[in-house]
Amino acid sequence: MGGFGMAVSPDLLYPPIELAHVASFLEDSGHQVTIHDADAVGLDADGVLERILADDPDMVCLDSSSTSLDQDLALAGRVKQGSRALVAMLGSQVTYCPDEVFAEGKIDAVVRGEPEATVLALADRVTAGTSLEGLEGISHAQADGTVMHEVERAKINDLDALPIPARHLLDNQAYHFPGIKGTVTTVKSSRGCPLDCSFCGYTLAQGLRFRFRSPEHVLKELDDLYVNHGLRHVVFRDPIFTTRKDRVQAICDGIIERGWKDLIWQCETAVKTLNETLLKRMAEAGCKHISLGIESGNAEIQRKHCGNKLSDLDQAADVFRICREVGIETRAFCMIGFPEETPAMADETIALVDRLDPDQVQFCAVTAYPGTPLYKMLRGTREFDIASMTGYGALEGNEFMSAKDIEKKISEAYRSFYGRPKRLLRELKTPGRLVGRVLRYFTLFKRRA
Image 1 (tube, helix red, strand yellow):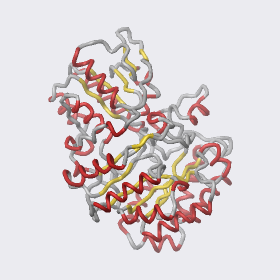
Image 2: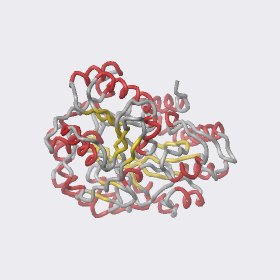
Image 3: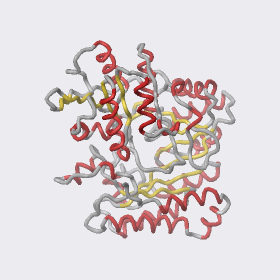
């Protein structure tokens, strides 16, 4: 969700690639860096705190997400209490609600937006023992408790100038994805998205301008993960991976030229950025799965909230058909509960997904993450509980559906899709995955304690 995070199955564990990018930037400038990923090594809060304090660090920077923010802040407070370190936090949700994050005095600074250059500048200030005042891209607590918001830092124009992520600091064999044998890793080959969907958090940190790494720079990272770390499954985490078809074509050509027939990869993108020629080349280069943003089957909602990325339904049906023909599995991302959405509009989404017949589908409750256009549209004088933003549970209803109605409609959508006879027959071919989906279905709306 653009860095905000959402509640997922324990079967899904991605590496903290944001921290790995930051770490490589720091190491290139001479700083000594350690990454502690508690989930990857099975540590609870006490265990990871012990490891952090054993490092006797000068600075600790925590990545965070909406669904884990309360635990993250609790850990930050314990680090601050038990060490001499400056404690900072990065992530989309702390970028757009920093005053709340500082309320309990558990952190010293928030890194807003794109983190690499800002964390490096912060580390340099800590090393030199100088004030944080005037440091672009941060918010920081002052001695009297007030919060100072420094000016924004400009986005990084030349992404090829970035070093490749510091995977040597990660336990790369610890990461996994549901239904995939072996380990996975993630790659961010571009930043920014021009579609500006009302609900999306990607553009908040990355911007609306599409910035991309060259094919050569992406292939350099693939060389590292393939040759040096023995990784064979890659998930590209770009907002719209195929925004530039010629770039993706060149990446595919490079993979094929290297003879990496055992490299398997997947990506997220938009239907309108795909065609048959590109899909065939992607399949030849090892692409086995594409997640596609469908969001809504209603034309009005598409135009107002979804970047109009699905204006041609026939073309969308062709894309899903071609994917099946070339051996690429598909997942449709869908959402229910937009402000103007009626039950009938939601039914259009359900009907469209039935027509497209993806291999998998994900129905989420529309969630107004802080800073998004949707948040500004809905908030008014209301306050949203950030920790309840799981992506599945509806925070509130609209004039046509209550929060419970939205959740019921999501349940109905899953039953409609997976309950079709031809779908059940297909699912029974992989009973293990079917059991996993059933279990996830029954825990979709489990409330946080």
